[in-house]
Length: 79
Image 1 (cartoon, rainbow, N blue to C red):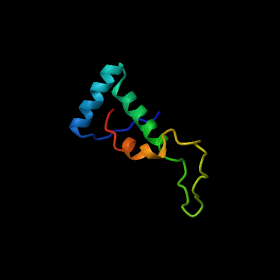
Image 2 (cartoon, rainbow, N blue to C red):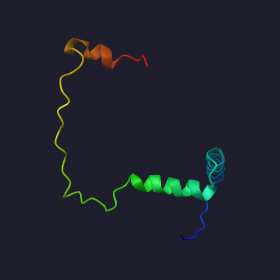
Image 3 (tube, rainbow, N blue to C red):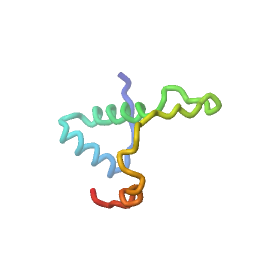
Image 4 (spheres, rainbow, N blue to C red):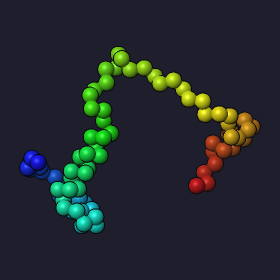
């Protein structure tokens, strides 16, 4: 394992420390887990835009609501 030093804004450091306390982890463990989660959101290798193509659409079946209710349902603000 590599030992490193980083600088964090005070507010971020405090939030990370509180999370570490709640989870009963070290601050280092919180930072490791955060870094792993962040890296999981990106591909390992950059994708060449020229090689990328739009995925084929999936069949999601028929609409669950009739056409005449679409406007009503789209504007419904109930949770």
